[in-house]
Length: 157
Image 1 (tube, one colour):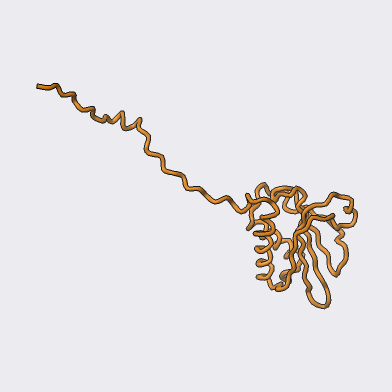
Image 2 (tube, helix red, strand yellow; image 1 turned 60 degrees about the horizontal axis):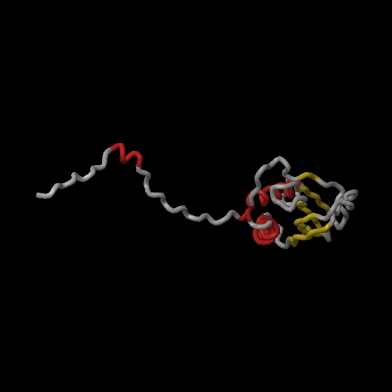
């Protein structure tokens, strides 16, 4: 007769110590804002801003992204910085232009805003959303539209 060893039974204590099989994590695509700065601005921000401005009734806005000197009176000696530049004609041969400055080449870095009408140089450089810690595409578009609306360039009050 052969000796049989009793089968080891699972005990409740052993079940508590056993870790459930780890589920494989799904790779999340990187956020749009994690793209390199210039790629994000050109591929995502400019088209979204253009669409937002057009939805406000400005059909022919020209948006560009350039690295150049600050075009504000008294600031021409500052180093070049990346700028989103928007231009359109508002009728009666009047042109409107705004500049959104990215001083740190980062959407969460220092930003500025200026505007001008009829080809004149902007006279004021304003800080732009300096109190926000984290920006994303939707917030940048929203803030820019809000600033243009505050100038009464989008909707008349």
